[in-house]
Length: 131
Image (cartoon, rainbow, N blue to C red; front, side, top):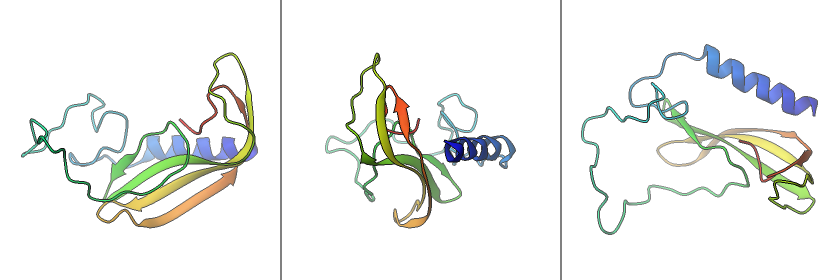
């Protein structure tokens, strides 16, 4: 549990003390101004009938956390479960053993640049992973 608190403290300080984002980075919820507005030139107004081309895919484990993109890197968190049965039930506490992971991927290729993982047992509702 200590590792979970340490990781959350590190993430909070990083978010508060991080440098200001350039307009094309989305390092926080809903973009640089947290308003969900994309200010880049050349933004596609309608998706093509066949969808957008996939640049790369990377398998990740469970979780509710969305990615943050900054300086050519994609950061995200997931949960690698080792034991316990996952049950997303609001009135029950799911007990799981596993590791939370912070992943840093290259935005151009999807290649793993680094990862940090720590043991983090869960005893919560909706225990699929970090938020």
